[in-house]
Amino acid sequence: MRKPILLPRDAGTAGEIVGKEVFIELEPNLSSCIETLAKREYKKALSTILKAGTENEELSERMEVLRLFLESTDFGALRSRYEKYLEEGKRVKFRIYSKKGRVNYKLTVT
Image (cartoon, rainbow, N blue to C red; front, side, top):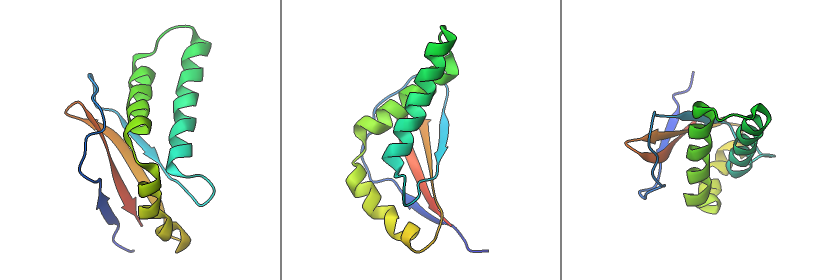
């Protein structure tokens, strides 16, 4: 078993959130980049809230984390950091999370 390669997020802020910590895991591939997956997850959470007709705190917090991630991330630079691993046949996983009121992510390659 290969040891995962952990790539830290570049320094920089990614917005603020209040409330519980939220963790979202996304696995991009050669046909769906991290930006596309984050947008899909955001739309899925929004659709669920709208269909339910009532606000769901957990989904609202998830949407806020995704919104801040989408608004504050340089996706061109981010793709250039992980696409080479996908081309080599490795798995790439993002863990997007809130920590101390900020949105951040951890990129793991296995």
